[in-house]
Image 1 (tube, rainbow, N blue to C red):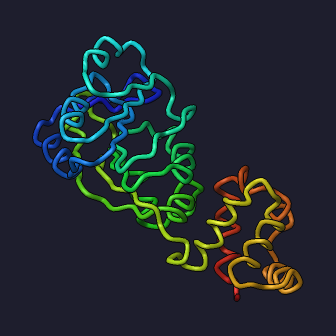
Image 2: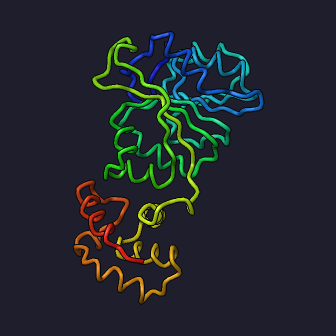
Image 3: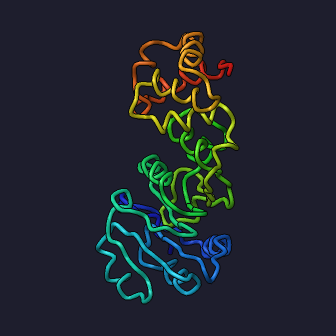
Length: 254
């Protein structure tokens, strides 16, 4: 069984051995790979990973699982909430996450040193990202990462079937220069998220196209973005406000 568990202990267990085998094959762990597993459960996947990886770190919030994980040799276990610890530098991260922490976890990944992340996650998140739907989670993901859908997992593959399809996906960091203009803006709006949007947008336009402050201010003024949005901060913008902002940003002429 593969435990889909990080914070909410009432999670689903993947019991379809065929899917588990396909997932393990997709990971393609190399002998020199340093791997971080987040949410190890009882260590079924852990026992495989520790035999094929050079080094395996495990992050598990549920200390009740110590009786299983402490028996596994040659791993380093961190018993804590992944949102509260530094994720070790690694080649690959392997995890499944409850939806309620995907956004803060994705933000954490921005400053985490890794090459690839493999994640079992519900279809709502995957569909939002791949369809470029406008919400904070989708915007942040597409502004920093490439998401590739690898494997469909039916609800019947779990002991307690979830309400939607799940997917195994791969995340890799994007190069800033490869982003479209709109995602370059969002990338920088997140970077300056503690500033008012009118200021963070100005800084973003200046950085992207080497504009003067006067030129950037003129572009923003011509967009006629509602003052209520310009005065808020990107870190607290609502999804509805983000959809409104996006409509104006699509008209931007740099």
